[in-house]
Length: 145
Image (cartoon, rainbow, N blue to C red; front, side, top):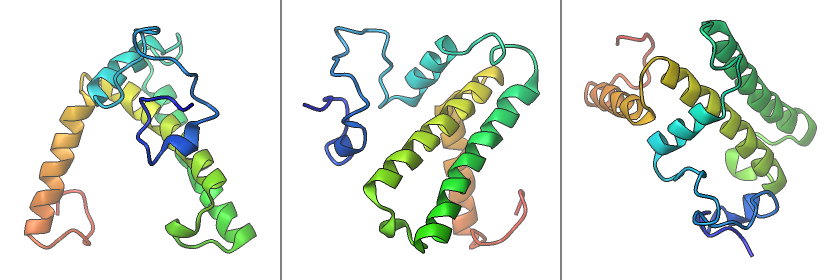
C-alpha cells in the first residue's frame, strides 16, 4: 500500500521509499501541500553547517545538487539518446525527482536564512513572469527586462 499523502499519479515514483505512516502517527512530518510548512520543517533538518552564518555552504551545495540533476539528464542523452522529457523512463524520473527534492531543500533553507518564505518567492516569481508575458518579453534576456 502506498502512502496516502502521495498524489495518485506520483505514487509509483516513491512507493518503495515512503514509509507507510500517517500524519497522526508521525506529527513531525510537514504538510507538503503547504510549501511554507515544508520550509519550516527544513529548518528542523538543518545541521550545524547548514544553519551557520556562512552564505557559501547553502549556495554551493544547492549548485551541486543542480549539477547532479543536469548530470543525470546529460547521461540520459549520451547513453540512451533521450532528448525529450516524455521519453525519460520511470526509474530515471524517480532518480530525477530525488535530485529535485534535494534542490528544493537547499532553496527552502536559503530562503529561510534570508527571512523569506517559499510562498513569498513564488508570488514574486508569478508577478514577474506575468508582467513579462504581458509585455511579450518572456523569451528575452536580462534580469530586469
